[in-house]
Length: 320
Length: 268
Image (cartoon, rainbow over all chains, first blue to last red; front, side):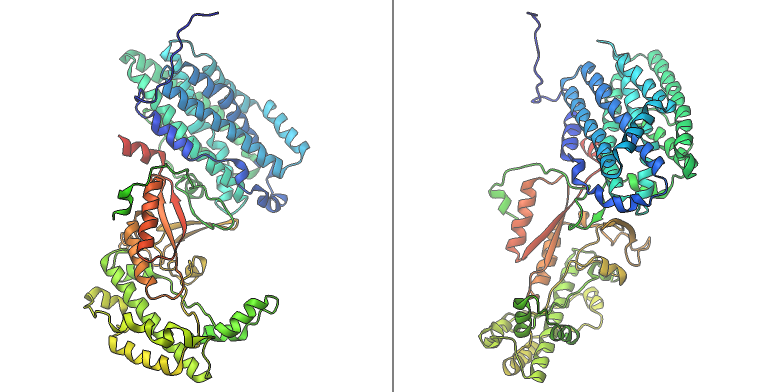
């Protein structure tokens, strides 16, 4: 038997500045794909012109969320020293699993088994997609015990994935949904986005706290590493976008959106943006606003509902 | 009222006998209103302010008065009242007491301007109406209903019902379609007055609905607008307050999520 001293997580005293806020916010917005009536998209789907692109978009997203569940959040949580942050990251991992499953839910609803198998095969064969997964995965698996530098790099990679690389895929359902096409699948994406925006901000924030502890030279070295890493991912992303969106002619629009999100990822990490400001398609920009819409109570569960905090009713409740 | 009455008398839903019978004997209709927020904006009045509450109070009183008058005239013309009118508080005159004994207060110039051509109903007018109703009766058992209109309002360039707007430019997901709808006559100059429902003080909202409810014979469906920062105690408090003010139903609670940036910003 080993003779280690195990420590217990103590939420009584905050050990991390914002861990509880991220924790509360994430749980408050819990959701399950089955709550969204994707089957209402079937009719439109049957006549939808770019089925192939759509399927591949979701295939690509599934892969990224799988990497993020199986490796990303797990590895980062494992090596993050703070127990409360560890807990938050583990919760994030669970949501990534929900996301990965939700794409399957859409596939199952819209596609035949053969089509689904083909998409998953394509995922394994697409060189750009595999390159992206590899570049992210290798940083995740390179984290070492008691080595803040490798942990920071992994957090950097995680923010790249969640605030930047997902968006070449998110573009399409948002673009279509904003025009009334395949609205319910787009709703699933809105819910995923709502989570990813917390993950990007939170992991970026944790990364910034680690970054502050480094010497100026180390900071400079890591910043340089970060920009080079981003640039490499960006160049691959441009090729992936061209490949994925070839038949739709949307590639230039998607690329603008990708650059916009690369800047956002850098901001989450407290770094200067890299690309000049461009005007992103307003239909898509509208789709990332996650404050919710005004919707019909009778046919939809809105994306805005959150679990309420419980507080006891006292005599003061009756004093106005 | 005449138009609604015609719809009611021309309708006979034979496959639901109870409805058919109720319609024949009760003659219920539901005259409603919409565009309150839009109208307040055009009158330069903030939704939820004292003026807005005085306006809706005076306006709904007039609506009540004229719908009763119309119902009385239809009863006179058709020589028919709703079933068991004689046993109602209209027939006993009790219904009119609060109006006849009301305190006639001075309205502010803003409220008078907003009322436009709508007359302010005096105690004397109520006294006269009471006498007429006692003589001729009322045709309708129920007259007024304020529906939570949405789409219908927008087609008419109105804001919904008597509710505050949910967004200055509304993103509207209904059925499987999404519509982006800027509020009627929204400009840079009046956008301040188009306060979004989630920023309206909920207690002022309840006061406003309560002022309207006083004059409406059926329950008004009121929606509460909260953010995810609200806890269950705050919700309970709003419900209890609504009940004490005579609100018949809190129809739904719409919730808006703050963004993660807002959440973090309000903590630091």
